[in-house]
Length: 199
View 1 (tube, rainbow, N blue to C red):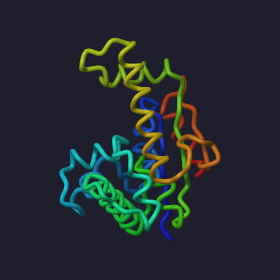
View 2: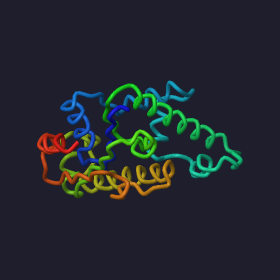
View 3: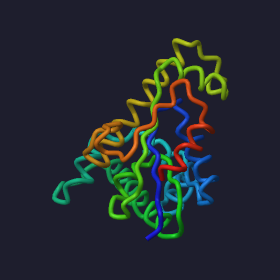
View 4: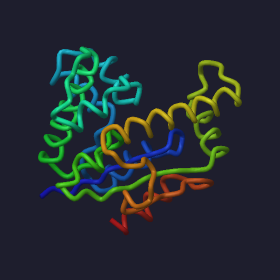
């Protein structure tokens, strides 16, 4: 069985960078946004629609339709969301079976549980997340700091909702992960060097 590492992360915590750098140090594949492309290829939907679904802006009937086979799907949108979910599961399994890898987001920690991944959750305090977003240009739309904080909270809320819909679990709950990493005031390369010895 391949060695799989999954990264869940709060927006602006540096989880994506941590995952990429960790994959480089371990010499394994790194999967993040390209997963959306592969999910779209498994469906008839655009990558933009797939991104909207996996970012947590799904139809309110979504958890009902994926968790209960007896549910009647009367809404075509709910059917499309279910199709994206199934393509996501299949895509993640295909990637996990290819090689050792680091997978960022996409509920991979839960959806790949039979592969026994090493599950990491990355978080930080709000001030640190705002500074990190500003440093990497996430406020390029001219957002004020207050608006950026609001955007961070909205994205986290969407991620939490989608995670709950897909897994029935609580996003960010320490019991769902093997390691929780606080990046507040930390340099990601330094953290990765320490993490490499733990994994």
